[in-house]
Image 1 (cartoon, rainbow, N blue to C red):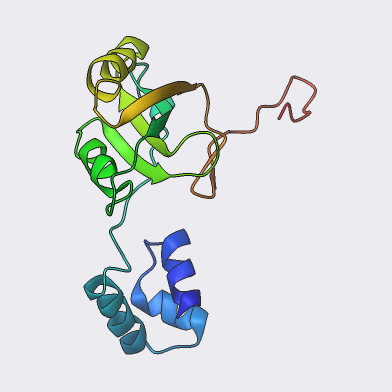
Image 2 (tube, helix red, strand yellow):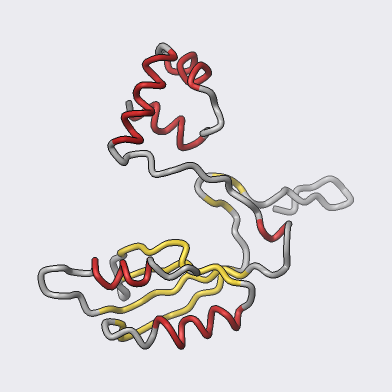
Length: 159
């Protein structure tokens, strides 16, 4: 079943019939497995990957590293959930290293992100350190290349 999950993850627009043909399964087996994955919470949803840089100039993404104090008996869950509930937050991940949580935020400007960090994240009781990293360019997102190959006048790839 992992092969089916990998296929769904990489090509979610395929029909169950197409997946079945690629995996030597029946369409019914694929459809049944997908429904079970959804019911069991394995498939959390489907999303399109949008290259917002090609759509608007008003799209800024930042990765904010947070040092937080875990709660006794609950670890990082409580503070991570408080942060995840913020509308501007795209993702919250527990990480190893010098920081504890990695928070992905999308906003219309660098200033909006800076104010969110200063006024909403930093003041949280369990947060005792932040480091903001602005995303300047994405080259690959979820396994999908985000950079078009540019060629110079002589036909050579620049990337």
